[in-house]
Structure formats: C-alpha cells, structure tokens
Image (cartoon, rainbow, N blue to C red):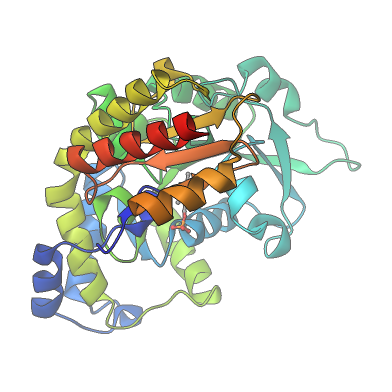
Length: 348
Ligand SMILES: *Cc1c(COP(=O)(O)O)cnc(C)c1O
C-alpha cells in the first residue's frame, strides 16, 4: 500500500495468494449456474453460517437489498436500527427500489434496539397501516465501534418475529469479526435469523463481493431479485476464487486486527484532548472525538496526518474521527498513527 490507511477496512487489497487463485480459477457462466468456483463459494459460505444456500453478490449493499426484497414487498414495513448501515449508508434502496417503509428505532451503546420498543413497533392488521414484515439487525454493529453483539439478543428478536409472523435479516458485513471477538462460530450468531449477508471484502481482503445466505427457497427467490438489480455476473469465478481464500484463510486472523484496534484505543486514551469509550472497542473500529478545547478540527487533523505522517484517517463529523484496522496495517503502522496524533495535538 502506498499509504497507511486507517479510513476503513474496505481499502484492503487482495493478498498475493488471492491474485494467484484468481489467475487459476475455473470459470463458467454463473447466470447459467455454471461457474464452479462461484458454486463452491456459495456452498462453503452457506455452510459457515449454518444455512442451506448462498448467493454471491457484488456488495454488501446488494446482499442486504436482495435479502430485504426477497422477504418484503411494496407497502411492507421493516423495523430497523436508526443508526444501522442499511438505513444510513445504502442510498435508501429498500424505499426507492422496493417501496418498503423503514421504521427506525434507537440503539444502545452496543448496537441493540430495545426489545420492548421492537415489540411495540409491530403494527396491527389495519388498512391504515403498512404491514410489519421484517426485522433488520446488524453484527458487528458498525456505528457503535463495531460492537460484537452476543447471540442471545438475536434469539430474543427471533421470538418477537415469531410471535408476529415476521422474518429477520442480519446485516453481517463484519460477521466474522463479531464471531472472532466473541470466541464463537459464525453459525452461533446466525442461528436465529432467516437470512444473512456478509462481506468477503473489508477485513477479509477480497477485492469485491459478499454472500447472502438463507434457505434454498429464499435463495431461489433472491437469485431472481439479484438479476433484476443487474447483479447477475458471468465469469464471476475470478472474484469468487479470492472469496474462497477470504473464507478459508483470512477469517482466522481477525483477532490481530482487534488487538491493533485495542492498541489504538488505549494509546488515544492517553493523549490529552481526545475523548473515547475504550471499553466498547472489541473489534476493528475505533471512533473517537476531539474535545471542545482542542484547537484542531477533525478535518485539520486528517489533513495534517496525511501530509506529515502519510497516515489516512476518516473524519466523521466536525470533531469526530474513525480509525479502522485491517490486514494491511500492523503494530508499526499503529505506532505511527499514535505518534502522529500525539505530536499534532501537542503542537496545537
Ligand atoms: C460495508 C458494510 C455494508 C455493505 O457495504 P458495501 O460497501 O455495499 O459492500 C453493509 N453493512 C455494514 C454494517 C457495512 O459495514
């Protein structure tokens, strides 16, 4: 990498093993169901999350949208987190493309909606009202430092959904980070949901791609939705080959990224003028803020870190920032980040 990039784990390049596998991949037309590498990836991905079938999609956004559109129809309503990725960062696809109404609820510091509020948000059968059809959950929860939410929360959400004949979809973009942080198998975190999307890109380093998983019947439907969204890819095995390496070789090392995020959090906590919640940093995302007394804005700090230290961070607001750890940043890069921030804040 030509820069030390903590903006996101989406910036990750494919590894040399991935480039080699892409070169060697057996290919076919995946819209005909004939790409052996895609078929293998879909099968293995479904197995990892304890579902019957998988569907390779271009992005997490497409996986979530295909999932939502396969569960819900125009005029249906989705109960979802107000600060969840699907509502905040996916261009409103459920509403603009699906005609599906979001019903946003607040979350706590660990990315959980209040269960009583979820139950109370379910609508009765009345022609004035949209139909409550789907509950959307997320794990790890990006906006809350990537907090890894334990499985009992999803079991409780399942119970509510069952009482009202609703489905549950999990945006598990960083599902493997959550599983690693909790010391669980991914399938432990998906046992209570009907469908799940996870990203092969991000911390798992594939250049492109996510997988949507669920029952055979659900995936059959989602395959048609994917086609309608323009997501039917042909010799996609070149991408799936990298995805297989993500699944088989990259999931086991995510603990290193979490240790590095922890190192960043503990280091930042010692710097005067920085505010953060170190106790909730369990995976690879660290949100922090510059205290009002700090003379630099987030944008100033980002610019000076780039210029003077070659370190890239994300500014999330006038005084808030985000650092994300991943395969391409290690301890040495973490030290450089901390040293840069410390010297810039001390200099004023
Ligand atoms: C990244 C991400 C997605 C999907 O993003 P794409 O860029 O479309 O792959 C979905 N949910 C969460 C929580 C994410 O972090």
